[in-house]
Length: 150
Image (cartoon, rainbow, N blue to C red; front, top):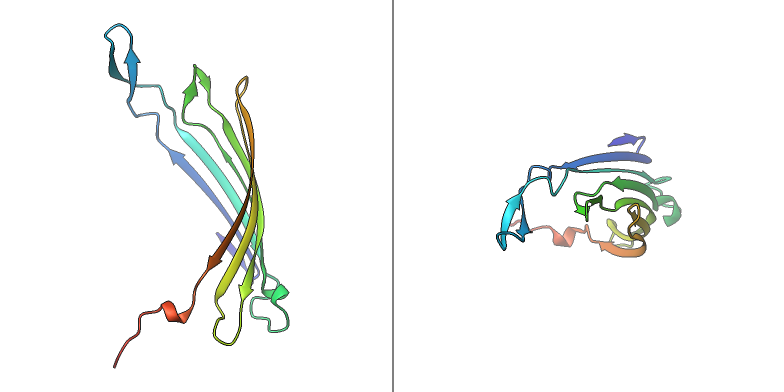
C-alpha cells in the first residue's frame, strides 16, 4: 500500500493458493471406490490492485470533497480442471465511492456504494459475465467504544 499526501491510496495484492500438493478423492471404476489422486488440482494465483482518492478528507465546505472515489481490478487463475481442460480464469473491474455521513453526533461513518463486473471464461467451455451492485454502511462511532469508569 502506498499513500500520498492523505489524498491517494494505491494498493496491490498477490495471492498464491497451493492446491497442487493436495491429494483429492477420485472415483476409480476398477475398484469401485474412491482413492486419493494427486495432480487433479493446481496452484491458484490471484493479483488485485486498487486506487482510493479523496480530494480533501478534512474539508468542512462540502461532503463532495470528503467523498472517497475508488477503482480496482483483478485477475485470477483457476485451481481445477474440467474434463482435462483448465477451468475458467477470472477478470474483474470495480468502481465506487464512500460517502461520509456527518452531523453533530456522527463524524466517522461512511455509506459505501460500488459496482463490480466479473468475467469468468475458459477456452471451449463456459463464459460468464456477472455484474454486482454493493451497498454497505460502515459504523465507526464512539458509541461502539467500551466505556471506562474511573
